[in-house]
Each structure stands twice: as structure tokens, then as C-alpha cells.
Length: 154
Image 1: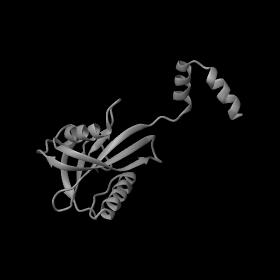
Image 2: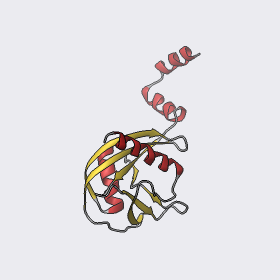
Image 3: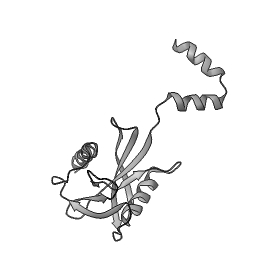
């Protein structure tokens, strides 16, 4: 069966293959998140204004079309917090089981600037990694995986 479908696929014009691919294949958006620690080893979390049940979470958001992921995490952190990061190193890439999303989580260092409240984030706070507030289970699992990676590098 697969062989016959591939033969049909070969004779389709490219534009038709593209349309069929969009319909047949699952589509995902790509999100980026940043793990930022202060000098005491506390993790930065943002209080997001648009999340009713669990407002606290990592700074980050969706990549724009044709945006480099490192540029995307730098942009998202600047937009959400007013902070500038110089270095972002990929820690974890995950394909969500809950939603159609691929999440890239970065360890962000060389942070500067001052927090500026905005329509997306009302406040930021550094938390002890073992004393995190309640938030989405998927993000908690992501943070735990990233902490394991960072601790294994010490």
C-alpha cells in the first residue's frame, strides 16, 4: 500500500504535495523557554497575566516564522521582562504529549537590565529550585529535567 501511495505522491506537482502535507501531517508550533538563575542559584519565574489557574512559569513564548531559536528566546525574555541575555545554551528539546508543540528550553546567562511590568508579565521572582510554586505539570517536568541536566554538568 505504501509503495502505491509513494508512486502517486511522486507524480503530484510540488504545490499539491505541500498542501497534502499540511493536511496529512500533524503541525506543531515551536516554543522557547529560558532557565535563568541568580547568584544564589534561584530560578527566575514570571507571573503571567493571561494564565488564570497557574500564573507562574518560565519566561518564553512562541518562535516567529523564520526566527532563529536563540534569537527567539532572547526576544521573548526581553519582551516579557525587560531583561537582556547574552548567552543561551539549549538544554532540552521536547515534543509535547499534551499539545502540538515542540518546546526548546535554554540555559540563559549574562543577564542584565531591570524588570519592567507589562501586559503579559506583572512580576518576576526568583525561587529556590526545590520550592517552586504550583504551575502546569508539563512545565514542572521540563524544569526538573533541565535541573537534572545542569546538576550532572557540575
